[in-house]
Structures are given as C-alpha cells and as structure tokens.
Image (tube, rainbow, N blue to C red):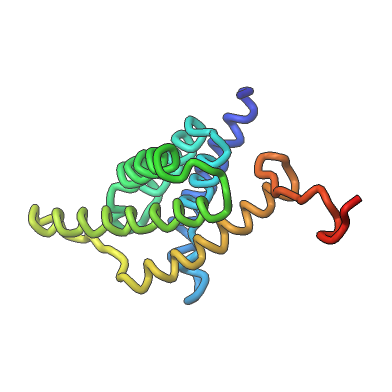
Length: 179
C-alpha cells in the first residue's frame, strides 16, 4: 500500500476511536449502541487486508484507551485479541466472502468482545481494581443488531461500487429461454 493509504487507515482508526469514546457514550438511547470499530475491522478482513485491519484496530484501541473519560477496560488488548480470533475464524471456518460469512464474523466478534469485557471485569474484581464496568447482555444484543446493519450496509456498498464481492448472475435472462 502507498503511504497515503496508510495515513487514511490511521486517520480512520483514530476517528473511529474518538467516535466510540465521545459520541457513542453520550448519544441518545438507540444511537448509543452504534459502534463502528468492529464492523470496519471485519470488512477489512473480508477484503483480505489483515495488516490494515490490525493497524486500524491498534490505532482505534490506543485512541479509546487514551481519550476515554472512564476506565476503558484495555481496549487495545481486547480489540487485538478479537481481531486475531476473527482472522483465524475467517481463514478456517468461513472460507467464502459472502454476506452470511460477514454476519457470522461480526456476531462472533461482538460475542468475543463481550466475553473479554466480562473476563476483565471479573479479574478486576478479584484484583480489587475499581472502576471497571461491562455492558449488560441486552446492551450487547443492541450493539450486535447495529453491527449487523452496519456490516450489511458496508458489504452491499462494497458489492455495488467495487468488484471485490461479485454477486453471481445467471447467464440466461428468462428461465424458460432455451435459445
């Protein structure tokens, strides 16, 4: 990749991190669950840009850890573990680059992130670290619903404007056409 592309990836990572720490936490009820970091990272993995996804998540995680007014629960560590597991899942389990695979990967990413948040909260309680919070199961479900919508929109956008994900079109116009 060119240096200008890496600069755009870095800027996107910082902007998504700023969005998640500032606007997502203070938005009204349904919009507080719109989070962009994991859906963008999953789409980068589906585009076979693993190194870009890792850089994007590293910069997003650093931004969340540095800018967050509350305890950010080791965002860079969580994001890196999530993307490592999702990268392995995308290579071993979901070998095709379809919308269904994208939905499975984003659902797995959100569930892994929820599990890691709960694990950090539990271990923080054992180590007497105060201020750690985790989202409830219903908050995770709302975030997952928005993640699925964002991933579907990104996938359809990439399908319409690029040739990365091609939708097979049958060669005949009419199914009764024999000529």
